[in-house]
Length: 326
Image 1 (cartoon, rainbow, N blue to C red):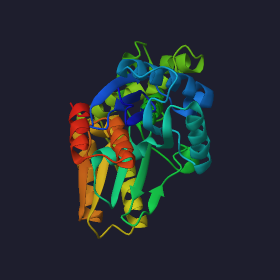
Image 2 (spheres, helix red, strand yellow):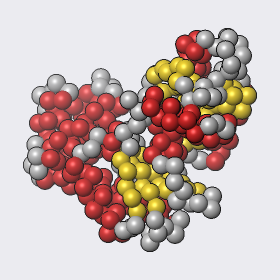
Image 3 (cartoon, helix red, strand yellow):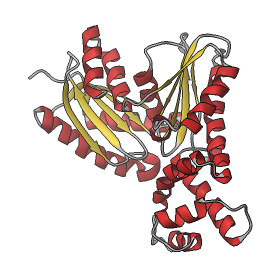
Image 4 (tube, rainbow, N blue to C red):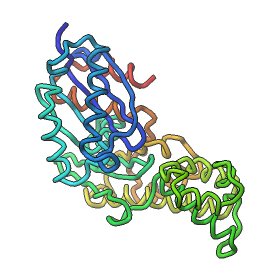
């Protein structure tokens, strides 16, 4: 068989998707694995997992072992934030010989490409973490360091979990206002009290990674109008809005037609309390911006971006969209 056109990788904070796509847009292989974020695993851990996933995809597609599996490798990773990181990861991908050509970018760009074909666009991803990118029609790119609180970031599922636990602990011992979250947090982990949860985390009987599981708990409590949960969700909505409008402002798009793509597990979940506040705030600050909530997997954006660089007929885009949007 002819070599596939694109090896597309979306390595997020919670999962990794790898697909192989033909020149006609046919989906030739699709595999999923755990997080491959280099911030979480380090470079060696990231590429050990990616090597296995790429090999599995190649086998699924019937590509001969030991050869480049595609014309181009379009690799989008959470944790590819700073220029030095992107350069290092790009060299590492090229050295593996997965494709004749390859490049690495932050996974937020994959969401952006999945969400729109239009220039003058911004994407905010809110899953386990939070990030934003923007691209102008003149090629200007706006991005954020996305290193957590040390670079001014707040938000994402893990942050919601931390805030839920913090507020619950203070409610339980009297330092903070009462909240239904206290009982919900303890019950979620099958423990009698919030302090028992804190102790389990402290002694590492409970992995701190599991705090992200509390994000849906916070959103549900907010919908039930628990005041503490409402404050947390409003804070998140305001951060999403702030990232989007800051990117729009830096691109000089606040008063111009633009697209704002929202995605990632938290935003794509469609929680009305969260999204209504984001959309209303954007309508006031950037009245000409069109907001699109993307439920398609970001690996679709990686595949589309790879096809952009290979050069294919329009029908290939339609075909891969249909294959990966179901």
